[in-house]
Image 1 (cartoon, rainbow, N blue to C red):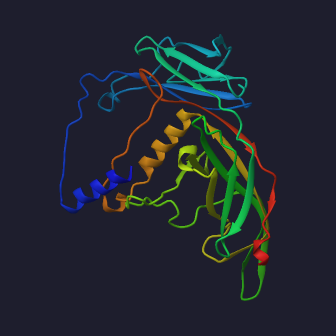
Image 2: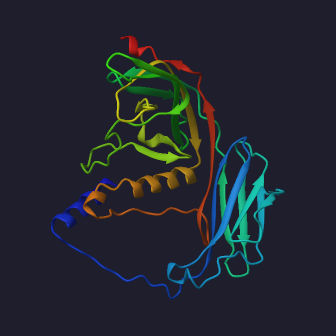
Image 3: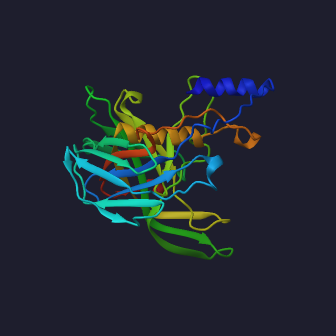
Length: 313
């Protein structure tokens, strides 16, 4: 991936420019399916019709006579329909378990039959967590886990914290507030894309409004993953102090489809040339045959709360 960024940088430096016309003549409306399915959680699958950009104002985006089949391990699953009869249809059903294979087939009168499937992965393997200190504000969390070398696996981690935050509201007056379930932020420049061939850029993506660190077992030979973070200030524009902090780590086991979709999002968003008004090459991933979008599975486990005693050092 890094080599293509070097290539585009060379093109930018030499002033090369390439233009092309988009061909809409054979473009047809298609089904878009979007769903992250978490093990042991209520399932929602959003479905809508997408139309060519050039025909957006003239093409009806309503799903015409939609019909579908949702199966778990080959057995039909009953669904509740939300917002039927308009441009978006949401299906809701009970939770699936780890190991379940989910498949959906959907079509309407003016779209092809779209098919997508995924397998809900097992739980994150046995693990240990160790909290370390990079500086007074920045923390390092080492995740050691037992990975099965015989399988390809994909993982993720999310960190939240609770504790006390304070700031000076005068020369010597401190104002404190208790915070709970706060999301952390990565250190400045932590996941900025590097163009050096051997440089490492962590895959860090926004997922449901929080930062999700993502990796695959092939990238971690020692079955350890290190992530860095800062505590998020509650007040902007003034120095913030944190004390009595505890963290909790949510550990993800991802399906291959989910890893590849998140990686594609990261690849698209991590554009080092954005400020120069240029876009870097990126790919779009979809596991919906004859359609667009994603049907992905994952499972989560939550660690115990870990006391941050590093402020005292």
